[in-house]
Image (cartoon, rainbow, N blue to C red):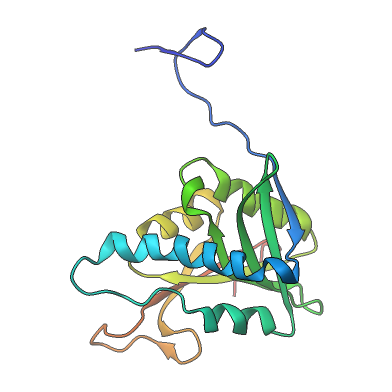
Length: 188
């Protein structure tokens, strides 16, 4: 079956449009909008897995704590002049092993390749990185697929809380997958 592309010609497959995402530092006056967009994007994941037992959305306090981290860099992602997402990164200028603490694509921009373009823009901005780490909730299948298949990360652990270590046998608590993407070829 062939499809008609945007120019009116027949194509046997549809090519993904390459998104041009630009990253700019978060301005203090935009912090409230940044946090609200992030919470809305995170809420979509929670709503998708829980009808009767609400899970907590990303609290504003967690966002503020991430922004206050001494190594934090907050970046707003834009595409075609429109804000489409953002990230909070923890940069280690000594080891160049960085952490993606928070990353979101605005709820109204999902499914357009923005996330992959956003991640590529992060890697382009920090070419000295030797590794990236991050965590995502165990129930967030879309995120897990994104980080594994689109961004080249590997799952390295299932943790109850990144600060407290492995999950308990009951499986209760906020289980998270811990990911790493090594760019230096080393695996420890």
